Image (cartoon, rainbow over all chains, first blue to last red):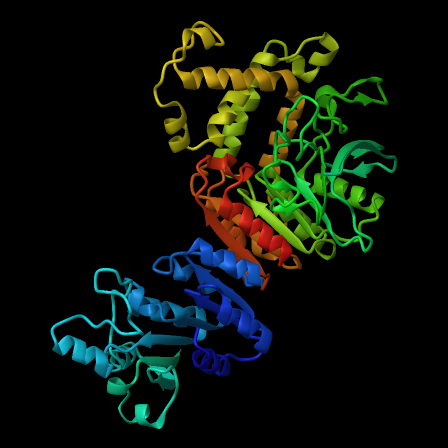
Length: 197
Length: 362
């Protein structure tokens, strides 16, 4: 995971908290949080090779398809749940968001922005966007529910989900003043801290 | 690999969960590798229902230990790094005190009068062994099936004595179906005319047919349907290699052969005792649910299930994982392919071995 993104998420995660990371990959974010914030963290991952990498790092991990059974973790009282770059791969992103906010008070979601101007140029030329952030062609991608920053924020509003904080990143994975002028056009990625009343 | 097999005596005896007591007992203990100076590399391996202390390496008859694919130099549990111990469980029939042993009070074999032992009793006897060996704590306790139950029980009973636990193809308690299968097996033993209420040794006979049938049934439950299909299909057995002339299919021949071999080495009373211990195990016990039972656990857990295992399916491991997470225990839950059904925990596959290796060395 990009350093900047890790830094933003780390800042939102409280010291000594209990964290679950859906789609945790090789566990590097959780490892960072364990080291810097002394969290108790669990990753959820479907890929066995990545699970192996988590275990090698000493990061607790659960084999699970995150399309199924998020509700199984509701009894565990997490302080914060994280879903980085995965929500657009889920069959029902809205249900997943609500479930995450049921199993933890807050959640962090990051998503690629289909409204980014390069994506729009791709679409204007009549083709599905292929960019460094969205590198796979339409038939190979796992991203079945891509959206723009505007779309995502409308969904949060519809679902009564409160955006506590947000950061937009440019194509270099960095925050910049320019991007914040019109994130839906200029950001490649949106990073959200969400809460449900 | 440095291997040592030893019959150890414990003269202080053990109080059993049932309220019974053994005033003294013996354990057949095998170890692999070397205990380091700081005594920080000891690993306890717990065997499943029909296993014993012979976990790794090769014996004089060329047979390999039941977990030889996992334990050995540079294997998942690397005996160049770890000092690995496995003992035949109390009540077993491979050298430890059990129904075949002589009861000092009667000077006759215990037979069915050997006291019923439980998973907790095994763990307690292993703790007595640990103290005798002056091992301050286990780096890891692990096992599959009934062995996994012992690993779980270790983490509950002696939280300060175990750093990591490996619970493979296991559950926090046996299911109704598990108990049902075991009861059919036990009943076939009891109904053998040579059983004599468990006192067959005195009569100079063995209830071989009963053990054989029990094992044949057991064997079916250890394999997956897919594995049986691909291995045997509906193929007919060659006339030359039939164990009995009335055999038609290969699978029949295989089960009869396996059952026969098993009945030559395994004790019928041990069969009943071990399956009773398995059925009786409930980690939650009187503690009002698994979540409460796991409250004091300090070990890191590694729970592994196999998709093809229908006897102890992965969901049973998941229950332990959820209860562990609710207790803020560092715990991982992995489900692997493994074609061999419940028996998958016995065999090496790259991912399984890597995960065990990385967990124990992390």
